[in-house]
Image (spheres, one colour):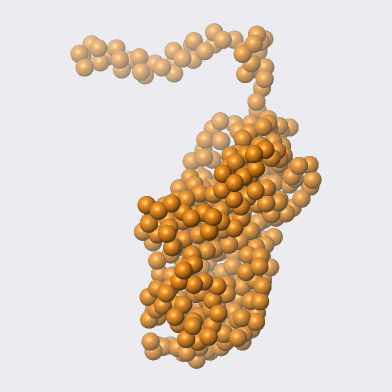
Length: 407
């Protein structure tokens, strides 16, 4: 490929994985530019080890490693948790809401460095290219974007591995173990290999990293108590902790008990279906606990409306539209609903299951007096007769008229 435009300095979204490992030399070969790598630390853990040495050895002039973990949890995960947003009512958006945050920080560095363009390693088939680029367009619409997967001569991950070998670039995958993974403190995703055919059962023993399958979980249950204030998690088993600390601890507890493993075929934004296995142990527990607490703290109409809007909120996150007026407006609505979502939820974790074990709140709307099956002095059961007569009047009128018309 011959470059159509000259760039002096390009900032690359860098993970040290297969794609971005070869993009550094590719950019230099095709554009003759300086490459500055930026890695956003959203909880990848050991994946960041040795990253600077690797980036420099493959041709980057420098590497920024930005600790974004607290911001990731407080400004992206918790608002999405409060919304109860799940894409296609299943996927807890682990990759989706990490990308806008990383892209925002990359833009900030690109502007500070006086870069001409930003590059990323997202494929032309995936969602992440949209998430990165919509964020870049929001914060720096004047910057060019380079997406090698849309233009280079490499057509597959096998081609990438051969390209890396030819340049003595170490990569963390082989042709025999070539899952495409994305890891952060919220989740770990797996795509590719046997998962490319929905007919295949996932090879969980080879794949899982955050936990075990339910079959391998302990025979004894684990009880936990989560505390929330205004919809945000604030304590675990009576200990006050940051939301980030709670996620880490729940990942361990959930993983040990086989919680949060899903195998799904989802509808990508670009139009195709894709299959993936996701590990989200802590997130699955938090979503469950938050919803349990809302059942006693929110009135019926608010709860139902929130459920309806949760799907739209999830679409905005999944589609990379975090920095949009609609997402901000929905977040404002969600935040207003969370003012009384305070209390404690007790759960039993057992072999992949999350079982309710009790919930309390100072703002509960559940009244034992009204709900009791025993004798009470607060509810006149005869009131229901008139209510049903009025509520069912349209049905009754239609039935009577249909009978007259022999319909």
